[in-house]
Length: 589
Ligand SMILES: [Mn+2]
Image (cartoon, rainbow, N blue to C red; front, side):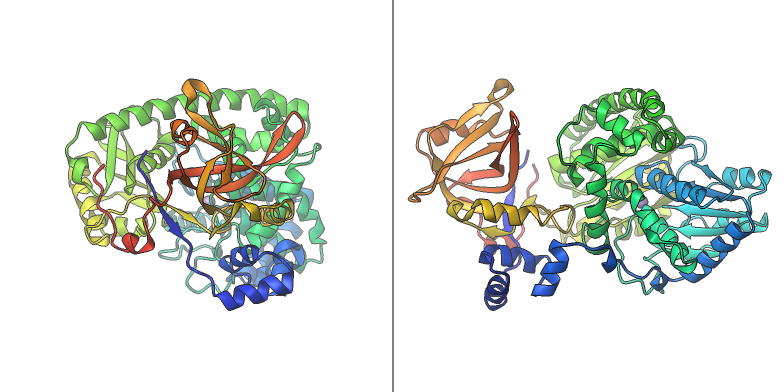
């Protein structure tokens, strides 16, 4: 792992901080954390700490919402057959489950369709249109996809089928759909751009309810699905998403939850009383995804639709097997990719990592790309070589917009699309070498030939004595945490062993900390630092360190205590100053 720079968040205005701290009667550090999150006054703080459904935006602010709702209402009235279509990833399958279930609840004549990853691929599909035509479908709702599929949408239109697109991907040429709901549309005035694909589907249903005087309360039991899509798609935990996830996580924490989710949690042996977005990301999403990626997305939807635990339990062990297989693929491909990088001089000086191989599994290349970024901190593409064609996933680092980079490589690509930090692409194998060089060149240019080194951001510097139970109770209310509302990270300087610091775990890899701040009289604190066992001897010998950490509750034998989750350690005073950071550091590993 490369050594990381520590960077403070932009400083907060002292006067604003003092005013907010006094109006809320909280520690100035808490006020600073709120200001960093865009919360500047008492009312905004109240809204933040008590997220309310009333604060959701009016769905009709979304471009084309009135058209979409009108068409959907008409289909319901006339009992026209509707097809709910979604991608095989978590956002797509949760969206299909949500929209399909709710329309069924309203008595709709509807069916759902998830494309096959191998025969149909990502996005809307010609096969689905043929299927719909055969079944006499008059209306298709696409979820988490469709915006890029103008040709296929036109094909549906030609067959006499209306399409409502619910997507959140970047919009290029507008497809000829009956209605296009996508907050990324340049002409869409919707105030929040961060919704997941499932979130856009939810807004359509919310609009449907409002238009037809149906109580939106009936939608609330589906917020578990929406919350899973928010976690899985790594969308920001701000604004509407944070409100929806706040209620969704409460649902997920109940004993009596959707049987499919209960079954997944049971088979993953999850038994903590609370569930967080992190649990959604690391426990629920991979298992739902596993089904879509390695078998078929239909399995994921079948599981989420199961009406009894018995039925769900029949399906969930399969997911557990598939998830185990996924982990194995992931491990092997990561190892092979590392070997390729080590054995190729190109990567010593490159600004990017682009690897490819025959026989790699398409379902895990995105995860492998993320792991390679952790190791080398360069924009990364991992491709599966199918002979004539290669396809795979791209992941980026801060400051490099992938879509922009891929745009500049477009002549060498067959297909590409996605978001700033994550994208998918395919190309002819004969273009691989040229693409690899071109991609490196455009990223090099973007970074002004300065390869950034990885960094960790911290919110505030703190004295350990400031961390009281009240302080932690307030920090907890900042949740749900996630992108753009991360668990607060603190810097504390001059930390020494308080007596019981020791290495733990297999081959003493980890570090159990028992620490205090030099010269402070407060109670020592406990902490955990993964993969930092080597610091034990330094601390035991009286060494002084600086740490950056977040806080978490450690539940042990049924009692809970506060512990520091230490993310990085450096010798006291050793971390770079802000001034050094501005110069950028060129680090060929
Ligand atoms: Mn999505």
